[in-house]
Image (tube, rainbow, N blue to C red):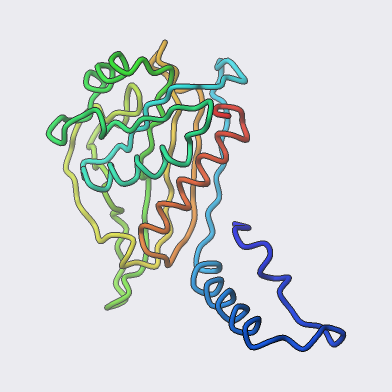
Length: 230
């Protein structure tokens, strides 16, 4: 993802001064960190404005929603994404900070929060697919993590699940060599249809907290690049 662009430039030439023990130790530490964190994942974010949407359209007060029945996963993801999106001109608030854990995600519950917050936009993110090999046993798990299994419907207004079908909790990404796809949709609160859709896909062997950080960073940077936040 280009997070460590300077690592490849760390080298000593024949004309260089003989490095000190301190500089050698520092170089070894940097290379160790790069080896642990730099090459275990790749994430790609692609987005587009929806047909008929006003563009560019910059939002200033956004409600961040992680569409998941797992309250802890939802809140953790919302907090990281909101942190990546905030700036001097963007106020991003998590749904978890305004909704109790026993309140079910729905169009009605989201609209109540929108009204109390005075939000001009909603950023709703959900896991679409997750597949990977378990580290122990070598078996496959393609159910995904925190993924709704609606039988004959999908996601409606503000990205909320219209029907809560059977939910199968799979092993978390922390135990997988995993590929995944996450869908993010941005809604203006004047209507219930998305104005912008963003797909974030990738592969990772990292712990879930690192993956969460990288996914959130990719989403926020793409939203900035396309002018939805500044």
